[in-house]
Image (cartoon, rainbow, N blue to C red; front, side, top):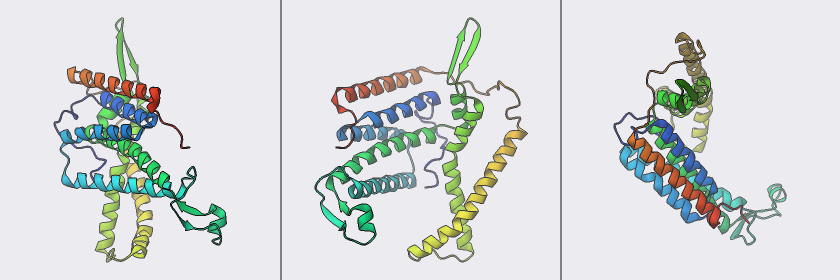
Length: 287
């Protein structure tokens, strides 16, 4: 799980794409996961993200982590929806009857619905598709490129005047820091767990042992995250962050032929998906 949400420096087709184009791809995929309602379309949309991983050549450990992440996510949605899918009429079987003390009257009974399990599987493909596209974006985009892309999303020159359209660089820096928060938190967790093991903590027990370890993990994790945030703030102040209204960039982003081709494909792909949702394959609330 360490390198699941971390940038990997490689020379691949996806890495060399403009970060703004990859960001538009992520936005397009996110829109389609919302507007699609047919299960086969959601499955195809998820499968459309997998060829990008072939270009990235991820390690076996990363593939294993992705598999377990998607498996746990799918299982969570299937179990939760099968238990709390109240739109179905005929339950498969009953777990807790309405007559059961306290829980029964509060929930009117807990049943397992096969329609809910299917609906949970469909919802899991929505989240898995978005997560897969997001991990592609994060794994191939350096944080500095992300800041530049958000701050100078459109750079237009009209009559010898430069017009820049984008987020304020303070917000762009905040978004970039939030993106890198997940791998930093995972690294901190591993460091704290290794330190506790070096001090004699045994994690080979049951659930109680792991819960007790999690209790001791929470406080140092929060302290280390706050300390890292303070160090980032000091480093930003030392380098003159927000010293001037208009900042300069070491590398200007410029679209090349591959970017235009990929951008065209993203526009056509997203537009065709929205068209399919409008002609009868769109998302509908459960009945």
